[in-house]
Length: 340
Ligand SMILES: [Zn+2]
Ligand SMILES: [Zn+2]
Ligand SMILES: [Zn+2]
Image (tube, rainbow, N blue to C red):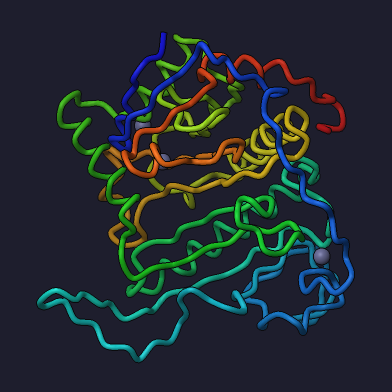
Protein backbone atom coordinates (compact mmCIF):
# COMPACT_ATOMS: atom_id res chain seq x y z
CA UNK A 1 0.00 0.00 0.00
CA UNK A 2 1.27 3.50 -0.75
CA UNK A 3 2.39 5.47 2.30
CA UNK A 4 2.51 9.22 2.88
CA UNK A 5 5.70 10.08 4.76
CA UNK A 6 6.81 13.45 6.08
CA UNK A 7 10.38 14.73 5.98
CA UNK A 8 10.83 16.55 9.29
CA UNK A 9 13.87 18.45 8.03
CA UNK A 10 12.12 20.13 5.09
CA UNK A 11 8.39 19.72 5.90
CA UNK A 12 7.88 18.07 2.51
CA UNK A 13 5.62 15.06 2.03
CA UNK A 14 6.43 12.00 -0.02
CA UNK A 15 4.25 9.21 -1.36
CA UNK A 16 6.22 5.97 -1.19
CA UNK A 17 4.52 4.00 -3.95
CA UNK A 18 6.26 0.84 -2.83
CA UNK A 19 4.09 -1.58 -4.81
CA UNK A 20 5.90 -0.28 -7.87
CA UNK A 21 9.12 -1.47 -6.19
CA UNK A 22 11.35 -0.03 -8.86
CA UNK A 23 14.87 -1.51 -8.82
CA UNK A 24 17.99 -0.28 -10.66
CA UNK A 25 17.21 -2.10 -13.95
CA UNK A 26 13.73 -0.50 -14.07
CA UNK A 27 15.23 2.95 -14.59
CA UNK A 28 16.32 3.90 -18.07
CA UNK A 29 19.17 6.33 -17.54
CA UNK A 30 20.45 8.24 -20.54
CA UNK A 31 24.24 8.12 -20.20
CA UNK A 32 26.06 11.16 -21.58
CA UNK A 33 28.19 10.64 -24.64
CA UNK A 34 31.73 11.68 -23.72
CA UNK A 35 33.05 14.49 -25.91
CA UNK A 36 36.62 13.97 -24.67
CA UNK A 37 39.46 16.21 -23.69
CA UNK A 38 39.77 18.37 -26.83
CA UNK A 39 39.46 22.07 -25.96
CA UNK A 40 38.51 21.41 -22.33
CA UNK A 41 39.24 24.56 -20.26
CA UNK A 42 39.68 22.44 -17.10
CA UNK A 43 42.38 20.15 -18.52
CA UNK A 44 46.08 20.80 -17.71
CA UNK A 45 47.66 23.10 -20.28
CA UNK A 46 44.48 25.18 -20.60
CA UNK A 47 44.90 27.14 -17.34
CA UNK A 48 44.81 30.47 -19.19
CA UNK A 49 41.25 29.77 -20.35
CA UNK A 50 39.86 30.13 -16.81
CA UNK A 51 40.07 33.14 -14.49
CA UNK A 52 43.23 33.01 -12.29
CA UNK A 53 43.14 30.23 -9.67
CA UNK A 54 42.26 31.01 -6.06
CA UNK A 55 43.68 27.73 -4.75
CA UNK A 56 45.60 24.77 -6.13
CA UNK A 57 46.74 21.56 -4.49
CA UNK A 58 49.43 19.14 -5.51
CA UNK A 59 52.97 18.06 -4.84
CA UNK A 60 56.02 20.33 -5.11
CA UNK A 61 56.53 23.88 -6.31
CA UNK A 62 54.76 25.27 -9.33
CA UNK A 63 53.86 28.65 -10.82
CA UNK A 64 50.19 29.63 -10.50
CA UNK A 65 47.99 28.86 -13.51
CA UNK A 66 50.35 26.30 -15.02
CA UNK A 67 50.09 22.47 -15.09
CA UNK A 68 51.26 20.33 -12.16
CA UNK A 69 48.19 20.71 -9.93
CA UNK A 70 46.00 17.88 -8.68
CA UNK A 71 42.99 19.97 -7.53
CA UNK A 72 42.43 23.51 -8.82
CA UNK A 73 39.86 26.10 -7.66
CA UNK A 74 38.99 28.94 -10.05
CA UNK A 75 36.27 31.60 -10.15
CA UNK A 76 33.44 30.68 -12.50
CA UNK A 77 33.90 32.43 -15.85
CA UNK A 78 30.21 33.37 -15.81
CA UNK A 79 29.60 33.89 -12.08
CA UNK A 80 26.09 33.95 -10.60
CA UNK A 81 27.52 36.27 -7.92
CA UNK A 82 30.95 37.86 -7.60
CA UNK A 83 33.22 39.82 -5.28
CA UNK A 84 32.20 43.18 -6.69
CA UNK A 85 28.76 44.67 -7.03
CA UNK A 86 27.70 48.31 -7.07
CA UNK A 87 24.01 47.51 -7.15
CA UNK A 88 22.14 49.08 -4.24
CA UNK A 89 20.20 47.13 -1.60
CA UNK A 90 16.61 48.11 -0.84
CA UNK A 91 13.64 46.42 0.78
CA UNK A 92 10.74 48.85 1.17
CA UNK A 93 7.52 48.19 -0.64
CA UNK A 94 6.90 45.36 -3.05
CA UNK A 95 10.46 45.07 -4.36
CA UNK A 96 13.37 43.65 -2.39
CA UNK A 97 16.93 43.71 -3.67
CA UNK A 98 20.20 42.86 -2.01
CA UNK A 99 23.59 43.87 -3.33
CA UNK A 100 24.78 40.83 -5.31
CA UNK A 101 28.09 40.40 -3.52
CA UNK A 102 29.32 36.82 -3.31
CA UNK A 103 31.50 34.23 -4.95
CA UNK A 104 31.00 31.50 -7.53
CA UNK A 105 33.90 29.08 -7.86
CA UNK A 106 34.64 25.83 -9.66
CA UNK A 107 36.59 23.10 -7.91
CA UNK A 108 38.30 21.13 -10.69
CA UNK A 109 38.56 17.79 -8.90
CA UNK A 110 41.34 16.21 -10.90
CA UNK A 111 43.76 16.79 -13.76
CA UNK A 112 42.28 13.63 -15.28
CA UNK A 113 39.40 14.66 -17.54
CA UNK A 114 37.58 11.32 -17.25
CA UNK A 115 37.92 10.51 -13.54
CA UNK A 116 34.79 10.64 -11.35
CA UNK A 117 33.87 10.76 -7.66
CA UNK A 118 33.61 6.98 -7.85
CA UNK A 119 36.96 6.41 -9.57
CA UNK A 120 39.23 9.08 -7.99
CA UNK A 121 41.97 7.67 -5.76
CA UNK A 122 41.48 7.90 -2.01
CA UNK A 123 44.22 10.57 -1.86
CA UNK A 124 42.57 12.57 -4.66
CA UNK A 125 39.25 12.58 -2.84
CA UNK A 126 40.94 13.74 0.39
CA UNK A 127 42.54 16.64 -1.49
CA UNK A 128 39.17 17.68 -2.98
CA UNK A 129 37.56 17.76 0.46
CA UNK A 130 40.54 19.62 1.93
CA UNK A 131 40.34 22.21 -0.88
CA UNK A 132 36.63 22.74 -0.12
CA UNK A 133 37.28 23.14 3.60
CA UNK A 134 40.02 25.63 2.93
CA UNK A 135 37.70 27.71 0.68
CA UNK A 136 34.91 27.67 3.30
CA UNK A 137 37.36 28.91 5.94
CA UNK A 138 38.62 31.64 3.62
CA UNK A 139 35.12 32.82 2.64
CA UNK A 140 34.04 32.82 6.30
CA UNK A 141 36.56 35.60 6.85
CA UNK A 142 34.47 37.94 4.64
CA UNK A 143 31.77 39.15 7.02
CA UNK A 144 29.46 40.18 4.18
CA UNK A 145 29.03 36.53 3.19
CA UNK A 146 26.38 34.55 5.06
CA UNK A 147 26.45 31.15 3.42
CA UNK A 148 28.42 28.85 1.13
CA UNK A 149 26.50 26.34 -0.93
CA UNK A 150 28.84 23.58 -2.06
CA UNK A 151 27.47 21.24 -4.71
CA UNK A 152 28.24 18.86 -7.50
CA UNK A 153 26.19 18.41 -10.65
CA UNK A 154 27.18 15.15 -12.32
CA UNK A 155 25.92 14.61 -15.85
CA UNK A 156 24.14 16.91 -18.28
CA UNK A 157 20.63 16.15 -16.96
CA UNK A 158 21.82 17.20 -13.49
CA UNK A 159 23.06 20.53 -14.87
CA UNK A 160 26.76 19.95 -15.61
CA UNK A 161 27.64 22.05 -18.67
CA UNK A 162 31.28 20.85 -18.82
CA UNK A 163 32.05 17.14 -18.60
CA UNK A 164 35.47 17.45 -16.86
CA UNK A 165 34.78 16.33 -13.30
CA UNK A 166 34.16 19.33 -11.02
CA UNK A 167 32.26 20.66 -8.01
CA UNK A 168 31.13 24.25 -7.45
CA UNK A 169 30.46 26.66 -4.65
CA UNK A 170 28.31 29.77 -4.49
CA UNK A 171 28.76 32.12 -1.54
CA UNK A 172 25.75 34.37 -0.87
CA UNK A 173 25.13 37.52 1.21
CA UNK A 174 21.90 35.90 2.50
CA UNK A 175 21.10 32.53 4.10
CA UNK A 176 19.32 30.62 1.29
CA UNK A 177 15.70 29.58 1.93
CA UNK A 178 16.48 25.82 1.98
CA UNK A 179 19.17 26.32 4.60
CA UNK A 180 16.79 28.56 6.62
CA UNK A 181 14.12 25.87 6.42
CA UNK A 182 16.48 23.17 7.71
CA UNK A 183 17.69 25.40 10.54
CA UNK A 184 14.09 26.15 11.55
CA UNK A 185 13.05 22.49 11.32
CA UNK A 186 16.11 21.44 13.37
CA UNK A 187 15.36 24.10 15.96
CA UNK A 188 11.67 23.14 16.16
CA UNK A 189 12.52 19.44 16.63
CA UNK A 190 15.08 20.30 19.30
CA UNK A 191 12.55 22.40 21.22
CA UNK A 192 10.05 19.53 21.14
CA UNK A 193 12.31 16.56 21.83
CA UNK A 194 15.48 18.05 23.28
CA UNK A 195 17.43 16.10 20.69
CA UNK A 196 18.95 16.70 17.27
CA UNK A 197 16.71 15.53 14.43
CA UNK A 198 19.68 14.31 12.34
CA UNK A 199 21.12 12.28 15.26
CA UNK A 200 17.67 10.66 15.51
CA UNK A 201 17.61 10.11 11.73
CA UNK A 202 20.82 8.05 12.04
CA UNK A 203 19.42 6.00 14.94
CA UNK A 204 16.14 5.27 13.12
CA UNK A 205 17.97 4.28 9.92
CA UNK A 206 19.93 1.70 11.93
CA UNK A 207 16.69 0.34 13.45
CA UNK A 208 14.89 0.17 10.09
CA UNK A 209 17.67 -1.27 7.91
CA UNK A 210 18.11 1.90 5.85
CA UNK A 211 21.89 2.13 6.39
CA UNK A 212 23.96 1.68 3.23
CA UNK A 213 27.32 1.84 5.03
CA UNK A 214 28.51 2.94 8.46
CA UNK A 215 32.17 3.78 9.02
CA UNK A 216 34.07 4.97 12.09
CA UNK A 217 32.87 8.57 11.68
CA UNK A 218 30.01 8.57 9.14
CA UNK A 219 26.67 6.96 8.32
CA UNK A 220 25.35 6.64 4.77
CA UNK A 221 21.60 6.06 4.70
CA UNK A 222 18.45 6.26 2.60
CA UNK A 223 16.14 8.68 4.46
CA UNK A 224 12.64 7.60 5.63
CA UNK A 225 10.91 10.18 3.41
CA UNK A 226 13.20 9.93 0.37
CA UNK A 227 11.87 12.32 -2.28
CA UNK A 228 13.45 10.42 -5.18
CA UNK A 229 14.57 6.81 -5.70
CA UNK A 230 17.96 6.04 -4.16
CA UNK A 231 18.21 9.38 -2.36
CA UNK A 232 21.10 9.17 0.11
CA UNK A 233 22.20 11.16 3.15
CA UNK A 234 25.74 11.14 4.50
CA UNK A 235 25.88 12.22 8.13
CA UNK A 236 28.86 12.53 10.46
CA UNK A 237 28.24 10.39 13.54
CA UNK A 238 29.77 13.16 15.66
CA UNK A 239 27.08 15.83 16.11
CA UNK A 240 28.51 19.02 14.58
CA UNK A 241 27.16 21.93 12.58
CA UNK A 242 30.36 22.88 10.79
CA UNK A 243 31.75 20.96 7.80
CA UNK A 244 35.07 22.80 8.08
CA UNK A 245 35.70 21.52 11.61
CA UNK A 246 36.45 17.99 10.32
CA UNK A 247 39.67 16.46 11.67
CA UNK A 248 42.28 14.93 9.37
CA UNK A 249 41.10 11.45 10.27
CA UNK A 250 37.46 12.38 9.56
CA UNK A 251 38.40 13.83 6.16
CA UNK A 252 40.08 10.50 5.28
CA UNK A 253 37.01 8.58 6.39
CA UNK A 254 34.60 10.85 4.50
CA UNK A 255 36.73 10.61 1.33
CA UNK A 256 36.48 6.82 1.42
CA UNK A 257 32.80 6.62 2.23
CA UNK A 258 31.79 9.22 -0.38
CA UNK A 259 33.87 7.54 -3.06
CA UNK A 260 32.37 4.12 -2.29
CA UNK A 261 28.81 5.51 -2.27
CA UNK A 262 29.18 7.14 -5.69
CA UNK A 263 30.91 3.98 -6.98
CA UNK A 264 27.90 1.91 -5.87
CA UNK A 265 25.60 4.21 -7.88
CA UNK A 266 27.93 4.17 -10.90
CA UNK A 267 27.89 0.36 -10.91
CA UNK A 268 24.14 0.01 -10.26
CA UNK A 269 23.01 2.65 -12.77
CA UNK A 270 25.95 2.94 -15.22
CA UNK A 271 27.11 6.46 -14.26
CA UNK A 272 23.75 8.10 -13.53
CA UNK A 273 23.33 11.88 -13.38
CA UNK A 274 23.06 13.13 -9.80
CA UNK A 275 23.18 16.25 -7.63
CA UNK A 276 25.21 16.25 -4.45
CA UNK A 277 24.67 19.07 -1.95
CA UNK A 278 26.50 20.08 1.20
CA UNK A 279 24.11 21.33 3.90
CA UNK A 280 26.25 23.20 6.40
CA UNK A 281 25.84 25.94 9.02
CA UNK A 282 25.74 29.59 7.93
CA UNK A 283 29.18 31.20 7.82
CA UNK A 284 28.81 33.89 10.45
CA UNK A 285 28.29 33.49 14.19
CA UNK A 286 30.12 30.13 14.42
CA UNK A 287 28.71 27.81 17.05
CA UNK A 288 25.28 29.45 17.34
CA UNK A 289 23.51 26.67 15.38
CA UNK A 290 25.56 23.80 16.80
CA UNK A 291 23.00 22.68 19.37
CA UNK A 292 20.34 21.68 16.85
CA UNK A 293 21.96 21.68 13.41
CA UNK A 294 24.00 18.73 12.15
CA UNK A 295 25.83 19.21 8.84
CA UNK A 296 25.33 16.57 6.15
CA UNK A 297 25.49 15.69 2.47
CA UNK A 298 22.43 14.96 0.36
CA UNK A 299 22.77 12.98 -2.85
CA UNK A 300 19.86 12.98 -5.29
CA UNK A 301 20.19 10.64 -8.27
CA UNK A 302 18.32 12.03 -11.31
CA UNK A 303 16.54 8.83 -12.31
CA UNK A 304 13.03 10.26 -12.53
CA UNK A 305 11.67 13.63 -13.69
CA UNK A 306 9.48 15.72 -11.41
CA UNK A 307 6.15 16.15 -13.23
CA UNK A 308 2.98 18.20 -12.84
CA UNK A 309 1.85 16.71 -9.55
CA UNK A 310 5.24 17.21 -7.86
CA UNK A 311 5.72 20.73 -9.22
CA UNK A 312 2.14 21.78 -8.42
CA UNK A 313 1.72 20.23 -4.98
CA UNK A 314 5.26 19.92 -3.61
CA UNK A 315 4.45 16.27 -2.80
CA UNK A 316 6.85 13.78 -4.35
CA UNK A 317 5.99 10.31 -5.61
CA UNK A 318 8.85 7.88 -5.07
CA UNK A 319 8.45 4.44 -6.67
CA UNK A 320 11.35 2.88 -4.71
CA UNK A 321 10.96 2.44 -0.95
CA UNK A 322 14.14 3.68 0.79
CA UNK A 323 14.35 0.35 2.68
CA UNK A 324 14.69 -1.41 -0.69
CA UNK A 325 17.07 1.23 -2.06
CA UNK A 326 19.42 0.85 0.93
CA UNK A 327 19.44 -2.91 0.55
CA UNK A 328 20.16 -2.72 -3.21
CA UNK A 329 23.02 -0.26 -2.66
CA UNK A 330 24.49 -2.36 0.18
CA UNK A 331 24.59 -5.36 -2.12
CA UNK A 332 26.54 -3.65 -4.93
CA UNK A 333 29.95 -5.29 -5.06
CA UNK A 334 32.93 -2.92 -5.00
CA UNK A 335 36.45 -4.29 -5.40
CA UNK A 336 37.84 -4.03 -1.87
CA UNK A 337 41.45 -3.54 -2.95
CA UNK A 338 41.05 -0.94 -5.69
CA UNK A 339 37.79 0.57 -4.43
CA UNK A 340 36.60 0.31 -8.06
ZN1 LIG B 1 39.16 18.24 -19.21
ZN1 LIG C 1 23.01 15.69 15.59
ZN1 LIG D 1 19.74 18.69 4.22
